[in-house]
Structures are given as structure tokens and as C-alpha cells.
Image 1: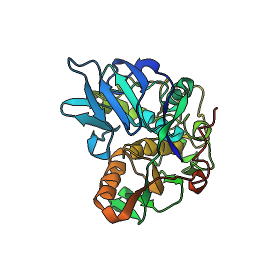
Image 2: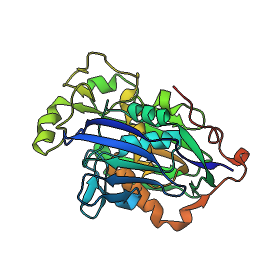
Image 3: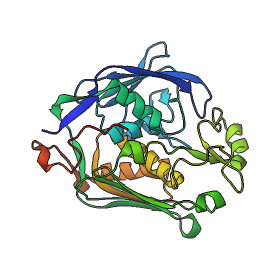
Image 4: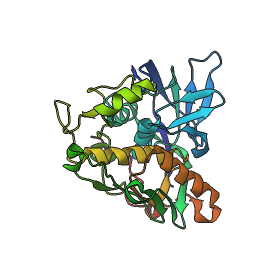
Length: 307
């Protein structure tokens, strides 16, 4: 049986929120089978639990935000991406503010936290949402066109293409295909950092965003070049970060996907709309388990590779 996974022990981290600039502590705790991933706002007078789901997403401006009543948690996508990449099904995330810490701007620190806590198999079958029919959303036209699509696939593959018309971005790879069955999430995707442009920072900060951002937790560019002294971590770091974000956004579905995802200039908003469209099309998917691990897609039965 392909089993669900949680952590062996708890682990903690402290950082600041990318957009809020607030200091925040998170504690990742093991959870029972079929719990899913649940964020707990432990700083509130009465702690509030927010279980991840596509319908719990209430804001997609610059990040993915989930809510339950008045309680919110912003910028969940990098931690969710790490959980997707390592196959963690059940987890409590205790958090002391309303935004997940940005740490180094990628998912690498979350991968380290999860792997240092250890990943444990549980006595329950891992449930996948399997695509039976293609589901696609398109927005805009011409230079404003963007789209995202899910198609049937025995595994989990993501293909992303970007188009920023910026010298520093144009000089790098514009399209990446990553297959979870054959690639290493920790090595190939997790270290890709979020990025932004100096011309946008003033506008974002006027809107209460990017208050905790800087060269130590993002790739920053002026009109011509990357300003970070160390340059890029990957030759195609920009588009790899879009893959990282998409994996986090899609894992908000609450179960891992068996599908091929492809996108052009998509973002948090379109990714969430795609999930909502999928959920409305009941005949486009079903839920499957694998009693025989040999029937599962290649690579899914093994615990995540270390660095």
C-alpha cells in the first residue's frame, strides 16, 4: 500500500513575513492520518484552525492566502510547495502571526525543516486526485494572454513558460518541465527564490506589501540586471520559482494530483481558479489509492531523496 506521510517529530523556525515584515514563529507538528495540512493561528485569543483547501483561498494578490472566518494566513505557497515536493500529507502548522515567514525566499528552508524532523509512513492509504479529462482556463488575449491547464497523466508533471520582457529574465531559461517521478524536487526546484523589480517596490510598499523583502530573501532587479551579489542559483531560476509556486498553489487542493499541469504566465489567482474549475467538473477527476505500490507512478513509493 502506498501510505500517507507525516513528520516523526516537531520542528520550528523563526523569520519575518515577506509582505507584512512581522516577526513570526512556525512550529511544524505531526498529524494523524487523513488530517491533511492544517494551519493554526496560535497567537489569537482562541486559536483558529485553517485546513487547506482550494475553497479556503481568499486572496491571491502577490501570494496565496487562506482563511477561516476572520483568521487568515498569508503566503502559504512556499511551505505548501515543500510539502508537495516531499509528499507530506498530514501536518499541523502552528503560526504566531498572519504570514508564513519568507526565510530565504525559496522552499529550501522548509525542505530542510521537514527533512530534519524526519518523514514517517502512516497506516492509511495515500489518496490522489486523478485527472480523467483536461481542464483549462484562459484569460486575456494577445500580449495579455495567460492560461493554465490540467490533463490526465500517470504521475505529476509541471510545465511552465514565462514572458516578462526584461533583459535579466530574457537572458535565462523561459520554460521548464519538471516531473516528480524522475526529478529531485529538493535539488531541482526548491532553491529557486521569489523575485521582484525595484520599480514595483515603492508601489507594493504603498499597498502594505513587500515590507519584509530584500536582497537576502528575493531576487531583486532594476531595469537591466539582477542586483543580488551572488547572482542566480539556477540558470533558469525565475521560471523554476514559478514551478515552485504552482506546486504550492495546487497542493492547496488538499490531496496530491495525478496530472500534467502546463501554464503560460499563470500565477496564484489563475492557479486557484483552475482548481475551483476542476472541483466543479465532477466527471473530470476521481480519487484513487494504490494497494500495490508497483501500480503507483515511478518514484512515488520512495521517501523523498535527501540533498
